[in-house]
Length: 334
Image (tube, rainbow, N blue to C red; front, top):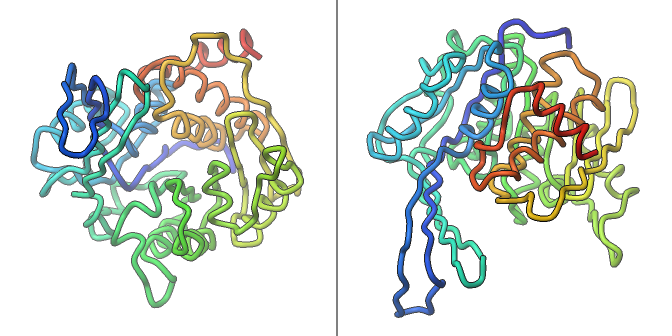
């Protein structure tokens, strides 16, 4: 696509990630101490804040649903910190979507409890297409929104209908999904892929969406990754298909039929503070690259750098920084 001028619209699940620092994860019926509680914006909020920090000049528009509660007010407050994020299509209603994360200090393991709330009722009725006029429309997260994942007689799922309608309004489309290995994953994601221009997912999500097993006895198999990328193209992705994993990013430019490989950065010991939001950061780099008319390789390099920035802090967005600093980090660690 040509370099964008109208911005990027992000629609879907806004989640409050609430982290509980606990001594240990107790057995059933037992007690543990909570030492600290911290809440951050997550879901589509990760991507919006990442993009806003990277380039304050890019218009960003959000369609989402937050609760009339403490978590909803926190998320709205975070979005309001960035003048280039337009929240005029943000609806306040009901209860927020919340992920309660138990961080056990003895084992360093995290246990997740998800409260669907707003995510369970979000659908196209909450989208004001006039306020969401943009160059790229991104829908996040498939497999986590009950109504969006629900059936549609004409398009297969409501998510597919939403993507179709965005295209009808002249927008390029993008999707993200959650990592779920289930019988329903392939059907829901495949319906959406018919109306998708940019798809950037991890290896677990790619296996579920395509049915191609990417790993063998020796780990990820590059030829199988290429097979999955071609399968994403066959299922409808028109422009860029990307599969990222901790070791490497693999891409396929559907327009020129070219594979791209960008290795992950060699991060020094102690650099990684947390993994939450790294996938969203990677996708932020991909979408920014598409918006700025970069090549797929340039966008994947930027995505790799953004993911590294995210890993440098505990939560999903604190590690992101201005574009020049993101690029500098890549040069230092490549």
